[in-house]
Length: 485
Image (cartoon, rainbow, N blue to C red):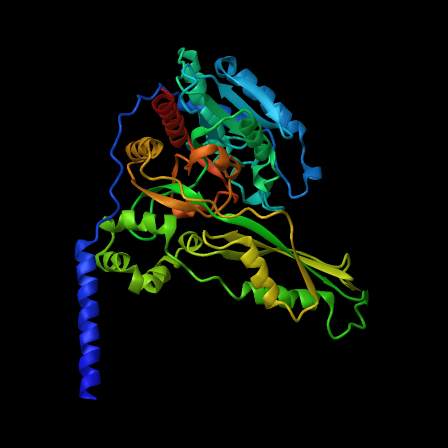
């Protein structure tokens, strides 16, 4: 017994020594060396806000069923962009591909330099039926009030689209001529991932384009980080995958007054519950680990100990991060049942019941593994599983040492005043289609939101401040002049 006790004590002392040594010698990944930035152009934030408000009035609402879309609203937006930004349209060539996706090119003077691709989409999600009364200002009114532009798309993603055009208009009007070719790609159907951006990416690939970097949306700046409690701006270097599982249960239909023991709805409910109630394990690795290790110097001593020794404390650090839904979503593949279909009337037993479960695939998990695991969960139930659409796999991780990263991280740090760290995009973007033709792809929207403000994205009372919009215009103008020469 004494030998066992001494062995246990020795193991504890040795383990404690390893933890102490790793903590004492732990260093956060070296920050990229700051690079010189071009100055910003003069920005009339009020005028930009008025134009953003005008763009919101075009109801480019992308519905689950494309037949419900009012496609003429996209056509009106295109015409309005051309008249509102004449200098930019004179400097750039516009093509419309893949059902109203816009591809602009601004030729650079040096064809040997790899081009850059900047992205922002035109479409917006619908508002929740019956929520109109909850909006402080009309959801498609584009009103300027209380220092904000209000309406659907103010942040996601017309804010970025208008800020890009404002920056390009100002530069073109001053006679700016880039050395690198600049592409501005604006998807028409990003919210349903219907593939307009894929058509654009395929077009550029056919033309032999290999981009230096791509920058697309990524709502990743927060005033209160879940680890440090301080402002953090994450430049997202990888993107989770996206897959929607379709579950179909069939049974005899009939009158609800004489139901059988197992109906299609009961079978479906059991299947959905089994899949949803078995979450995927959490992991702090890859882009997520890089991001939190970059923040370690600002963390508490206890958190630094855990970050320096994830081999031992990963479950405890994960438990802390899981208190934030946004942070928790980056740690594992998420499972979200979202849609149900059954009988057309409450007293009818459906012959077919359908559910859809949306998965956001963490790097390291594949759609094939998700399908195999889901089928195993419901193997004894009369339910068929299939993908609603071909899945999107999680992406590779872009560089945090490259010249584009240095430009972006310097610019983000200077303009936001927040600590810059890499991170993982938990949602999906059109940039996924462009990764094969880009050396690096980054996701960042130049606006810092509080955790409470983050809820307005796809929610009620979406808005962006006039001040923040002006800063976005300044951000894009400096990025273009610095990166494109």
